[in-house]
Length: 264
Image (cartoon, rainbow, N blue to C red):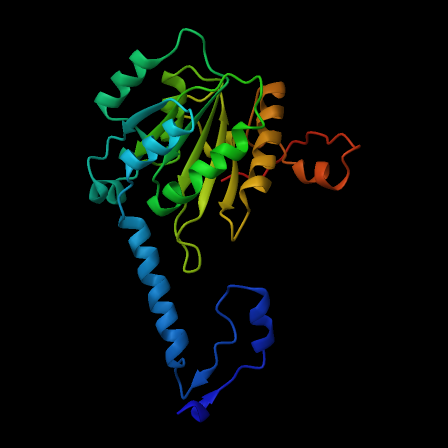
């Protein structure tokens, strides 16, 4: 049976990418092994979208590491509403809004971190805590607010959370839309002066945070750079360019701030 499989001439390139290339051919179809691998990846991506976030475990992990935490829920009452009504995932429930109003400290924090399920609770559960550790060890002297765990959350939910907690900056650690090779990829969104109504042009994004993509230390380096310059300039988004790689290539050269940035 294996003799009937025609190998692809690009087979050697598979060592350099997770993309589905050079899979071979059996007649007019894929060989059995890559077809089964595709079906498995597709099932893992679907599971990532529907799997609930285990908030109790996440709160326990964070508190063990010394973080104070808060728990919130969007206006989407369940996963079905969350998927059908993206607008509901961008606003807090009435109960959560009231709780955050009472939790606001007298002194505004410099930054609040939000861990959100997004479209992959796997990513939030697996990547957010080690990444948070890598970032916060670089933030000596910063006033860090409580870590907020958010369920049924879209990126913009961080704007309302940051506004109610009166934080100067909000960082959303959120499960990205799962791909067929990355069901556990974490996205990081940074917004200065968060408030309801902020647009995507006012944010910076770091994508694909996971050991197989952008590892924790590299992502923490980028976020620390953006946080530092966002606070200095009083802005994020298209006005804040990520020149963090320049520090790795030439530490003696001070990077400049340009007028454009890749945002999502």
